[in-house]
Length: 214
Image (cartoon, rainbow, N blue to C red; front, side, top):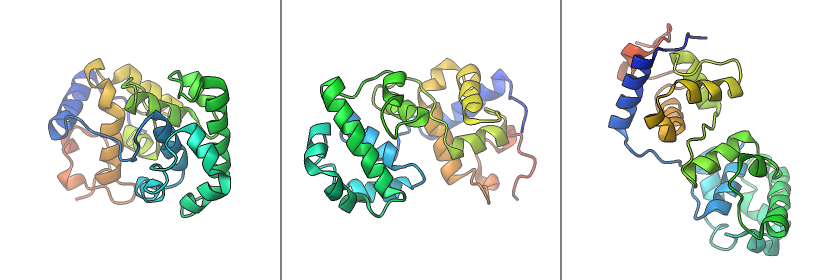
């Protein structure tokens, strides 16, 4: 695990990220807060591209909790059966849809605790929804962010909560809103798990990773 980078280095890293892409966006397709919750819940142990293929025909007909309940679990399964763990995910989507209808008037709540209380919605999913829909600077730590945070020294931590806290504590406030998207995209397309693209990395000179590729 790399040591935490200092403030000036952190500012320079995120200044470069922002210069490369000022308004990074998540890659999961959605049309409202509800479809975002569903998409993120479906994305566990699946790729965003795979989820988008599955929801392309689903969301036009089930973009509210009530419409999803009307669709029914078996028809939902037909749409998402190409996604891993689809039966369990379908069950959770139906359960959370019923809770949203019965307890929240069909609206998605915007508190982390309320979101985390929904079946199939953990802290990471809650943070994604808070960040992408309500533009709250929540940090959703996935495998990409965990890897990048620890490799580079941007946000070292032994677990995802520690990495989340390191981002919140050490990334300058003016970069917080987009921090997790910059880190996810950097991990997905540049700082890859097996063969990081160090020669073309825009923060190569600031990164603490000792095993840089040539």
